[in-house]
Length: 69
Image 1 (cartoon, rainbow, N blue to C red):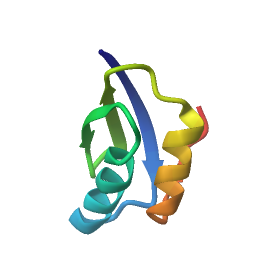
Image 2: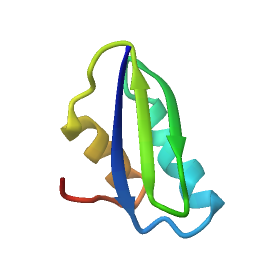
Image 3: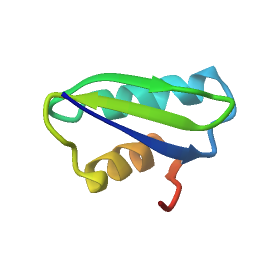
């Protein structure tokens, strides 16, 4: 298992969290997504490491931005 935490900017409500969670969950290998609205932290658990570019694309598809590392 692999677990990585990212920071997503622009999430302001539960719908935002749901949208981001749904998009990231569609990435191959992702088994769990835990998003914290208050901090913008999104922890992605997967069977194998997921490319940051894939997470960034999913977050942007949902209408938000992945903060620069």
